[in-house]
Structures are given as C-alpha cells and as structure tokens.
Image 1 (cartoon, one colour):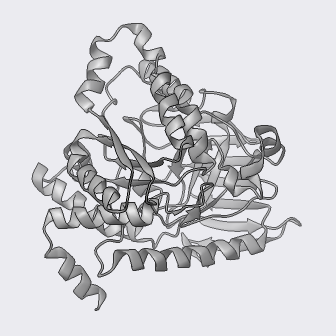
Image 2 (image 1 turned 180 degrees about the vertical axis):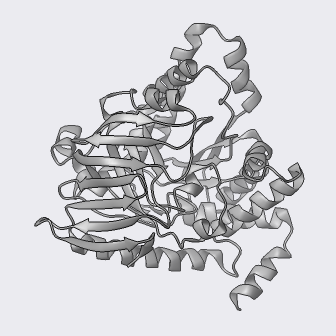
Image 3 (image 1 turned 90 degrees about the vertical axis):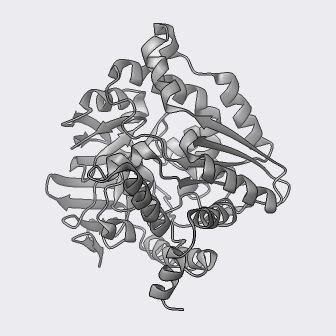
Length: 420
C-alpha cells in the first residue's frame, strides 16, 4: 500500500478508531508495557477519551493496574485566585513520594500532554515561579528515576480546546480541535497502514544517526545563525541517544511520541556564546517568547525575552544547575513536524521540529556507564544536576551546526538546518 493510500484509509476511520490506534502505539511502542506491570498515568481532564483508550490497551497488554491522575485547568486557576499565600510554596510530597515508590515497585509512567499552554499567562509570575519550585522539589525522587531511565516511560499528546485555539486562532473551536488532532496523528506516525512497524523503521533510522555521532567522538558542537554563535562542549564519555531505549528495568520503550531527535549530555562548564530561541517556549502555563541568552563557562550570565522574561529569569534561578545545560539535541529542519509549518506551542512537538538545548538536569544514560554512577561521579564528567529540565528550540532553516574534534578541527553536521 502506498503512503497516499494509507493516509486515505486512515482518514476514513472515525475519531474513536484513530484514538484507539494512538493508544495502541502509546502502550506497545511508547511504553513497551509488560504483562503484570502497573501503569501510572497523568492527563488533563479534556484528554479523558484518549486516557480511557490507553487504559483499555494497557489492560489488553496485561497491565496489573492502571492509576490515572487528572489535572483540571479551572481548579488550577482557582488556586491562584483564592488560595492563601502559603499555598504557593507547597506541593504534596506525600503524593510524589507515593508515585516514586510505585516506580520503584515496577510501575511504568505515561503522561498525556495537552494542557492549555497559556493557562497561567495572566497570573502573578512570582506565584507561578514559587509553585514550580515547590513542585520540582517534591517531584525530585520520581523525576530522578525518569531522568536515569530506571523505568519505562513515555509521553503522548491529546488535542484539547484551549490548546487548539492557540495553535489555530483563526478557526472555529471545533475546526481547530479537528485540525490539531490530525496534526497529532500525523506527527505521531499513526496515519499509516502499520504504525508499530513504522515506528520500528523510524527507530532504526534514528539509531543509524546516533551510531554515526557516537563514532565521531566530537568534543563540542558549534551553532551559528541569526543571533546565535554558541559553542556547546560535550561531557566527557558522553553518549548520543535517539529513538527507543532499554530502561533500567530491562523494558525497551520510546520515551517521546513523536520524536525526531538525536541528543546527548553537554559539559556543564564548557558552554560559551550567545543563542536565540527560534520558537516560543510554553513552560507550565506561561508563554516565553524570543528568548536570548549569553553563556560564559557553562553558565547563563544574561537572559532576555520579549514575553515571559520574569518567568524565564525565575526559572533559571531555581538552583545552581538551572543556568546550565543538561541536554543538547540535533533535529533536521526537514522533520515532518517542521515541514508541517505548525507552531504547536508545546515542547513535545516543537522540540522535534528544531535542534534544541535543555536547561537543568542531565540524563545519566547519556554518559558511558552513567546509570551506575552517583551525582559526584557524573558531575566530574560534566553532567549537570538541577531540579528542572526545560527544553527550548534553537534550530531552524538558518542554523548551521559543526562538530568540533578534540584537536579543534570542525566538521559540518548541518547546513541550513539539514544534515550534511
């Protein structure tokens, strides 16, 4: 069957049938869920139809129990309107400790993205920052298990009305919602005849690119383009990763659906120069636009944004590691998401349309033997530690990337956003 025929056949499915196909990919490809595993899922209330189908697919795959925590936007806003001031320095550590214990007991983790990206844009940025810091501290035990890839986990997306209105502001709500669903289905590679086989092939292609990058053993990357001249030193004994991965519990999973990236760990003290974001960042309900920063010896020393600047500066003040990088990723400009021309206002999608960097916590699995190292050993090799891990996009059709060898010689990796 040709690609055009497969897409036409997919278009003839009902929305419920399409959601069921996305749910099957989430469970079989994203999680690689094993019989007897528990599943802990988080989702916005508007994602209930997808969450129910994922639950069904999980039980069909042999899940022992599926437990879902739902987020409700009006309830979140009610906190900012009516809660006492002390509320914004509090997060339920007891709940996060329970979730971490669930992971330690063998549970998988699935998050459905789709909350309103601009939910908190009109709220007091000081309260937003305090809330985020409290949540990061409480969630650290669970987050460490995720960043170390101790468990199988994945993220998928559901179209929701408020998100759809932001992505397609000129359309009626039902049309915008339908358009966003179709964009999610296409980006998540389920509008083909056999999505599971398609993901296996896609993972194979990403692995080939990862193997090439690992063979090169570059000591740094150099990004150049409008507003950007950035040298990102790579951690000692760094490893490139991309596509699926085998978690510490032995389960092969695909952490992000969709994904187009090859990524690794920068050296926390070897980043220098200036860089300008090529897409806005939606961070926990706040939109941060036109980010521009300057690094010296690995640390952000200047940071500006045309919108959300106060939230940005509070974000990078979360802790010492928040001003340093924990990830650098290469994504070609000809990726399906980039070519769609859609600004999703959602990092899960926008980071797979452009090369990007992440402030904060590094992935220990991107260090040779890192999953067996403690924090001090990882830091000695250059891996950053922080309560946050926030990706933002720096690639475009105007950005060139060179790999820098240990002797200083440069090799072209990307030109105008495309692999050389």
